[in-house]
Structures are given as structure tokens and as C-alpha cells.
Image 1 (cartoon, rainbow, N blue to C red):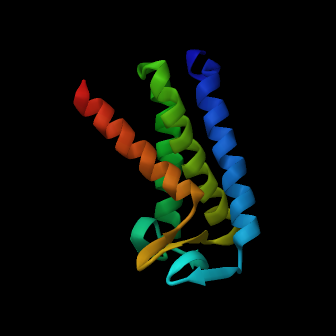
Image 2: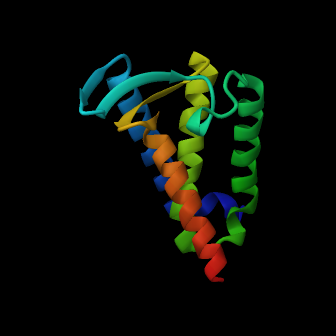
Image 3: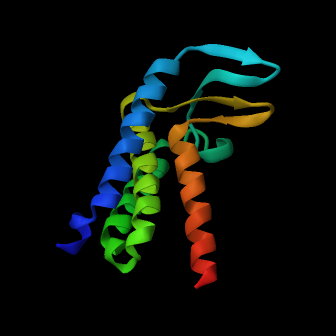
Amino acid sequence: MKNFVSKNFWIAAFTLLILDIITKAYFKDKEYLLNGFGIDYVANTGSAFGLFKDQFVFLIIVAVAVLGYIIYELNKFHLKEHIWLGLLFGGILGNLLNRSYLGYVIDFIAIGSFPRFNVADAAISISIVYLIFNTMKK
């Protein structure tokens, strides 16, 4: 099946997933702040920006649905976009694993008063922005 042969997609997804798992494990329960910037562990029961707080089942369903959609539609995207889709997939999977095993997502990156986030969140956000702008250019 063509969907599963994109090396760029799988390399990006699993590299991001491993990086996410390592950083979340390392920074769990840690705090290193200087003027509001640095590391500040938070157990996030919601999604980005604290939306859908304590909506465990809903967030699991959405994550699984989006992961399935990405795999299903992967061959419709240009190969250059597979890296971005891989980062999106790996980020969603990383947060899904946290939510499934812990009941929350580990966030730890602190940038002033901006909500705490993690490596997966950053990859998800950057990938979505790239894919939106790339789609708008077409």
C-alpha cells in the first residue's frame, strides 16, 4: 500500500515521537525558570491552550480519528509534505500516549505567560501552520 512506504513520513514521525518521549520523561516534575522562561512542569488534562479540560474520551477519539485520517490521506499529499505530516502524526501520537497512560499530557516548556507546552505541541502547531500556508499557496 502506497501510504506505508513514505520513508520521510515515518522517519519524521518516529524521530519526533522519540524526542517527545525523552523530553517529557526528563522534564517531568522539574522546574528551571528565569524570569518566566525555561522549564515548568504541568500536568495538562486538556488540549492546546487548556481547551477541552478533563475531556479525556473526546480528546482520545479526536486524536485517533486524526491519526487515521492522516494515514488514509497520506498518498494525496506531495512527498515534500510527508515530513510535515510525519511531525504532525508523531506529535499527536506522543500526546495520545501520555493521555492514555497518565490521563494527562506532560507540558514543560515555559515562555513567559504563554501556556506551557511540549515538543509534540510545538511540532503539531508548526506542521499545521506549514500545511495551511502550503495549501493556501496552491
